Image 1: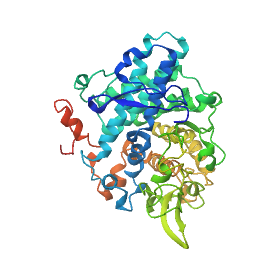
Image 2: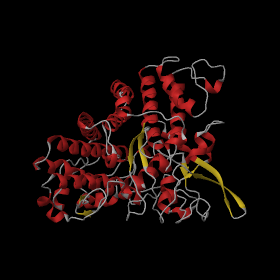
Image 3: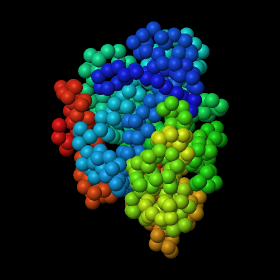
Image 4: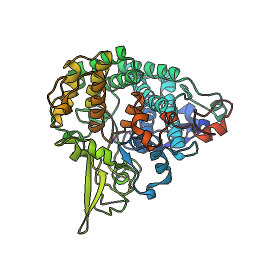
Length: 489
């Protein structure tokens, strides 16, 4: 990762690993976890351990692959148009994935590997003699990461093992069963609250990309929104909006200025997973992953076009006429030789790879536009107010996209939002096109209870709100790890 590079070593059951660390943000030096208990002695050691924890975000089971597969491919935003993109991806697209399909095991393993790295920081730092403020900040950064990782897990799998201490040997792993989601959410809230209280508003220089106070606050707001705790979501998200002068967040003047390598970690970005090409495994795969199979060098000049996240016709049609976001997000054709090929593909993550699956493109986890739309949604859930504040925040997003404002009694039926139900659908639509291909759509549909209504035609059933627990985990620990309802062991 840019400024956060990692090497790690696998250790245990639940497929949790202990992370080794980099010498600093630019030079990597592997350290065996076997002598890990003797290693964490200095502030520099903890800096390295925290770098390893950030590195977990790059795992295949997190933001390298799994989160966009789950967040978009599972939804109506994208699809697999060529089976050569992979049978497991086809299964996810068609709601045919099983407990043995790799997405479950990769996502589960990657997150618990990363959580082990985070727990190392939180646990080991207590005994280290170092500056008290720096110690508190490192622990807070680690808690933000743990909160983010458990938020992903609980939304994907439901009840999951809640591991908040370092696992030192395989036998310890067998002690963990699936904790109720309520307990997992309580831990997430505690971690993010602690992080928000300690983290600085911003970082500069080589530290850009670390978790900030605003990142913790915004993520906590999303947690409350997901739990439908509107009374907590509204003030939490408003806090982020009210603190923009300190956090330096802003809705940028143009949608295009949010994306692209030159614009990474900009003022609209709240938290990004950092990638850097040409750095021995620190590059991102999206440029290659999202290019259509058969496009040769027409879309991406280096590496293989893998066709793993293709915009659907429905997604294409979701954009209103003159919405500037469409051209920034996707295309409908490419020119190969002398031929124009009609094929949807994502351009939001186009870059110039150094090699196959090795680009500079970061992944934005949270940005300010998301906060504004979440706040509008939470206000509406507290009570619809015709042309009230919720409309103001919704229309800020629309107006930047070159679209007209929606009002409660607009003479144009397409711009009329006359009641609470209509506002919910307006927010759903706006989130879809504003946050297209950023991994939010599936989670939005599930948390609003709209997934089956939208996706039922593709074979979705009620139990598909959650993914199956990996069969490997059930086989390893059958007395404590049980399958989600609707899936066969």
